Amino acid sequence: VGGGGGGGAEEEEMEQLMQRHYSMQTPHKNDKEQQQKQQDDQYEISQDELYELMQQVEEELLRQESRLVEEEAELCEQLSRQHLEHQIQEFQDWQLLQSPQEECVVVVVVCPLCRDTNLVELPAGGGVACPNAACCLTELPQAKSLENVRERLGAAFEMHNCSSPLELVLKSSTGDTANDEEHLVANCHVCDYHLVIV
Image (cartoon, rainbow, N blue to C red):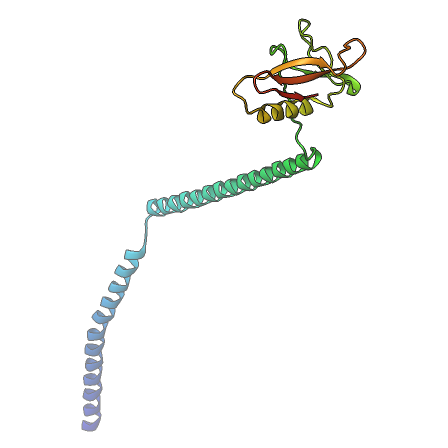
Protein backbone atom coordinates (compact mmCIF):
# COMPACT_ATOMS: atom_id res chain seq x y z
CA VAL A 1 0.00 0.00 0.00
CA GLY A 2 2.84 2.31 0.83
CA GLY A 3 4.36 1.77 -2.58
CA GLY A 4 1.07 2.69 -4.19
CA GLY A 5 0.81 5.86 -2.11
CA GLY A 6 4.29 6.86 -3.11
CA GLY A 7 3.43 6.42 -6.73
CA GLY A 8 0.42 8.65 -6.35
CA ALA A 9 2.51 11.39 -4.76
CA GLU A 10 4.96 11.22 -7.61
CA GLU A 11 2.21 11.51 -10.17
CA GLU A 12 0.75 14.49 -8.34
CA GLU A 13 4.14 16.14 -8.18
CA MET A 14 4.68 15.51 -11.87
CA GLU A 15 1.30 17.03 -12.69
CA GLN A 16 2.13 20.15 -10.67
CA LEU A 17 5.43 20.50 -12.49
CA MET A 18 3.69 20.27 -15.86
CA GLN A 19 1.13 22.87 -14.79
CA ARG A 20 3.88 25.26 -13.72
CA HIS A 21 5.70 24.67 -17.01
CA TYR A 22 2.50 25.32 -18.97
CA SER A 23 1.76 28.45 -16.95
CA MET A 24 5.25 29.74 -17.72
CA GLN A 25 4.97 29.01 -21.46
CA THR A 26 1.49 30.46 -21.91
CA PRO A 27 2.40 34.14 -21.19
CA HIS A 28 5.36 33.87 -23.56
CA LYS A 29 3.09 32.56 -26.28
CA ASN A 30 0.55 35.28 -25.62
CA ASP A 31 3.28 37.93 -25.90
CA LYS A 32 4.33 36.64 -29.32
CA GLU A 33 0.75 36.66 -30.52
CA GLN A 34 0.34 40.22 -29.24
CA GLN A 35 3.48 41.37 -31.05
CA GLN A 36 2.37 39.74 -34.27
CA LYS A 37 -1.04 41.42 -33.95
CA GLN A 38 0.63 44.80 -33.43
CA GLN A 39 2.77 44.26 -36.53
CA ASP A 40 -0.29 43.29 -38.54
CA ASP A 41 -2.07 46.40 -37.29
CA GLN A 42 0.82 48.54 -38.55
CA TYR A 43 0.34 47.28 -42.11
CA GLU A 44 -3.42 47.45 -42.06
CA ILE A 45 -4.92 50.57 -43.74
CA SER A 46 -8.34 52.04 -43.46
CA GLN A 47 -10.86 52.30 -46.30
CA ASP A 48 -10.20 56.04 -46.63
CA GLU A 49 -6.48 55.45 -46.95
CA LEU A 50 -7.10 52.71 -49.49
CA TYR A 51 -9.38 55.00 -51.53
CA GLU A 52 -6.79 57.82 -51.43
CA LEU A 53 -4.06 55.43 -52.57
CA MET A 54 -6.20 54.23 -55.47
CA GLN A 55 -6.90 57.83 -56.45
CA GLN A 56 -3.17 58.60 -56.52
CA VAL A 57 -2.47 55.54 -58.64
CA GLU A 58 -5.25 56.47 -61.06
CA GLU A 59 -4.00 60.06 -61.35
CA GLU A 60 -0.46 58.86 -62.05
CA LEU A 61 -1.74 56.50 -64.76
CA LEU A 62 -3.69 59.37 -66.34
CA ARG A 63 -0.59 61.59 -66.32
CA GLN A 64 1.48 58.88 -67.98
CA GLU A 65 -1.22 58.30 -70.58
CA SER A 66 -1.39 62.06 -71.27
CA ARG A 67 2.37 62.22 -71.74
CA LEU A 68 2.26 59.30 -74.14
CA VAL A 69 -0.50 60.98 -76.17
CA GLU A 70 1.48 64.24 -76.36
CA GLU A 71 4.67 62.45 -77.41
CA GLU A 72 2.76 60.54 -80.09
CA ALA A 73 1.19 63.77 -81.37
CA GLU A 74 4.59 65.48 -81.53
CA LEU A 75 6.04 62.53 -83.41
CA CYS A 76 3.16 62.54 -85.91
CA GLU A 77 3.56 66.30 -86.43
CA GLN A 78 7.29 65.94 -86.98
CA LEU A 79 6.80 63.14 -89.50
CA SER A 80 4.13 65.15 -91.31
CA ARG A 81 6.40 68.20 -91.46
CA GLN A 82 9.29 66.14 -92.81
CA HIS A 83 7.00 64.57 -95.40
CA LEU A 84 5.73 68.00 -96.48
CA GLU A 85 9.27 69.40 -96.74
CA HIS A 86 10.25 66.37 -98.82
CA GLN A 87 7.29 66.93 -101.16
CA ILE A 88 8.15 70.62 -101.53
CA GLN A 89 11.76 69.76 -102.34
CA GLU A 90 10.66 67.19 -104.91
CA PHE A 91 8.33 69.75 -106.53
CA GLN A 92 11.11 72.35 -106.67
CA ASP A 93 13.47 69.80 -108.23
CA TRP A 94 10.78 68.92 -110.77
CA GLN A 95 10.33 72.62 -111.61
CA LEU A 96 14.07 72.98 -112.21
CA LEU A 97 13.98 70.04 -114.60
CA GLN A 98 10.96 71.43 -116.47
CA SER A 99 12.29 75.00 -116.76
CA PRO A 100 14.76 75.89 -119.52
CA GLN A 101 18.40 75.82 -118.59
CA GLU A 102 19.01 79.37 -119.82
CA GLU A 103 17.10 82.16 -118.11
CA CYS A 104 15.19 84.58 -120.27
CA VAL A 105 17.08 87.89 -120.11
CA VAL A 106 15.25 91.05 -121.12
CA VAL A 107 17.58 93.29 -123.09
CA VAL A 108 16.89 97.01 -122.84
CA VAL A 109 18.60 99.41 -125.25
CA VAL A 110 17.82 103.13 -125.15
CA CYS A 111 17.58 104.69 -128.58
CA PRO A 112 20.98 106.30 -129.22
CA LEU A 113 19.40 109.08 -131.29
CA CYS A 114 16.43 110.41 -129.32
CA ARG A 115 17.65 108.93 -126.01
CA ASP A 116 14.06 108.99 -124.84
CA THR A 117 12.60 105.61 -125.82
CA ASN A 118 13.80 102.02 -125.75
CA LEU A 119 14.46 100.31 -129.04
CA VAL A 120 12.23 97.38 -129.98
CA GLU A 121 12.79 94.32 -132.13
CA LEU A 122 10.63 94.13 -135.23
CA PRO A 123 8.77 90.86 -135.90
CA ALA A 124 10.01 88.16 -138.28
CA GLY A 125 13.63 89.29 -137.95
CA GLY A 126 12.91 92.71 -139.40
CA GLY A 127 15.62 94.39 -137.38
CA VAL A 128 15.12 97.02 -134.70
CA ALA A 129 13.41 100.39 -134.58
CA CYS A 130 12.56 103.26 -132.26
CA PRO A 131 8.81 103.52 -131.53
CA ASN A 132 9.14 107.25 -130.89
CA ALA A 133 7.32 109.00 -133.74
CA ALA A 134 9.59 112.04 -133.40
CA CYS A 135 12.73 109.95 -133.83
CA CYS A 136 14.32 109.38 -137.23
CA LEU A 137 15.44 105.86 -136.36
CA THR A 138 12.37 104.23 -137.84
CA GLU A 139 14.03 101.03 -138.90
CA LEU A 140 17.38 99.25 -138.87
CA PRO A 141 16.70 96.02 -140.78
CA GLN A 142 20.35 94.98 -140.77
CA ALA A 143 20.39 94.83 -136.97
CA LYS A 144 20.22 91.19 -135.87
CA SER A 145 18.78 91.82 -132.42
CA LEU A 146 18.70 94.24 -129.51
CA GLU A 147 21.55 92.28 -127.94
CA ASN A 148 23.60 92.80 -131.10
CA VAL A 149 22.91 96.56 -131.07
CA ARG A 150 23.81 96.78 -127.38
CA GLU A 151 27.11 94.95 -127.88
CA ARG A 152 28.04 97.05 -130.92
CA LEU A 153 27.26 100.31 -129.10
CA GLY A 154 29.35 99.23 -126.11
CA ALA A 155 32.28 98.31 -128.36
CA ALA A 156 32.07 101.69 -130.14
CA PHE A 157 32.36 103.64 -126.88
CA GLU A 158 35.16 101.39 -125.58
CA MET A 159 37.27 101.84 -128.73
CA HIS A 160 36.83 105.61 -128.72
CA ASN A 161 39.74 106.97 -126.66
CA CYS A 162 39.05 110.65 -127.24
CA SER A 163 37.67 112.92 -124.52
CA SER A 164 35.22 114.41 -126.98
CA PRO A 165 31.75 112.83 -127.00
CA LEU A 166 30.72 110.55 -129.84
CA GLU A 167 28.10 111.65 -132.32
CA LEU A 168 25.61 108.95 -133.30
CA VAL A 169 23.82 109.49 -136.59
CA LEU A 170 22.02 107.61 -139.37
CA LYS A 171 24.00 107.62 -142.57
CA SER A 172 23.63 105.95 -145.97
CA SER A 173 26.61 104.08 -147.33
CA THR A 174 26.11 105.56 -150.82
CA GLY A 175 24.61 108.89 -149.90
CA ASP A 176 21.34 108.03 -151.61
CA THR A 177 19.01 107.58 -148.65
CA ALA A 178 16.06 106.83 -150.94
CA ASN A 179 17.56 103.67 -152.42
CA ASP A 180 20.12 102.59 -149.82
CA GLU A 181 19.80 101.26 -146.31
CA GLU A 182 20.76 103.60 -143.55
CA HIS A 183 23.30 102.59 -140.93
CA LEU A 184 23.82 103.72 -137.38
CA VAL A 185 27.23 105.38 -137.36
CA ALA A 186 29.46 106.72 -134.56
CA ASN A 187 31.62 109.75 -135.45
CA CYS A 188 34.07 111.98 -133.61
CA HIS A 189 35.11 115.22 -135.31
CA VAL A 190 38.05 115.73 -132.96
CA CYS A 191 39.93 112.46 -133.44
CA ASP A 192 38.29 111.48 -136.75
CA TYR A 193 36.92 108.31 -135.14
CA HIS A 194 34.39 106.58 -137.39
CA LEU A 195 32.57 103.30 -136.90
CA VAL A 196 29.51 101.75 -138.51
CA ILE A 197 27.60 100.22 -135.61
CA VAL A 198 24.81 98.49 -137.54
